[in-house]
Image (cartoon, rainbow, N blue to C red; front, side, top):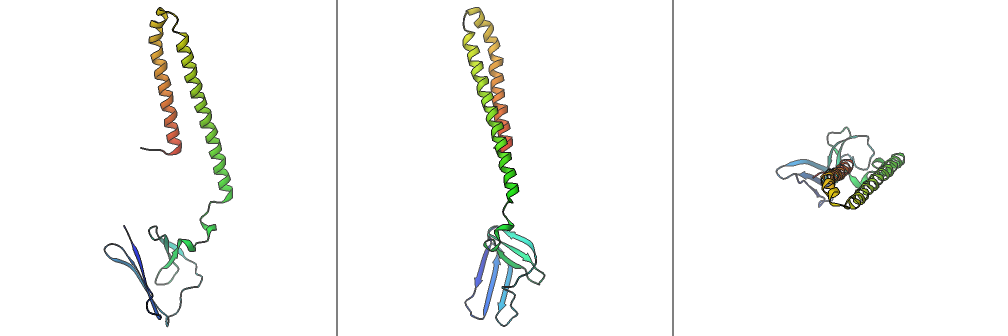
Length: 161
């Protein structure tokens, strides 16, 4: 659902902020200069709601209203992946890449080996008749191996149709 944030600061003594969804107003904030200032102070709070469309979060910091925290105001240390975890992820990716490369090389070797066998078996007609019955299962096996290989790649990388 689309939400809009309206800020009215046309009067020098007051500021009004409204968070409006399609059908109704969700939040309304009014601040007067004569009122106690809550802005520019440091508070401890919990994120109560994240609004991806606004790229911001509402924070419950113990007052009657919730605070508004823009994504750009968040210190980068709080949402970045720690270096140790990055190293582990890179190592796992490298292992996975090597494993998949090895499997693809094995599949290519099996295809070449099957091709060499089929060329050597075309020597005489009697062998061709018997080989034709034997080649079908080999071709089916290579197709099944390819399908299994691709299905495993899809499963590991989360590819879905």
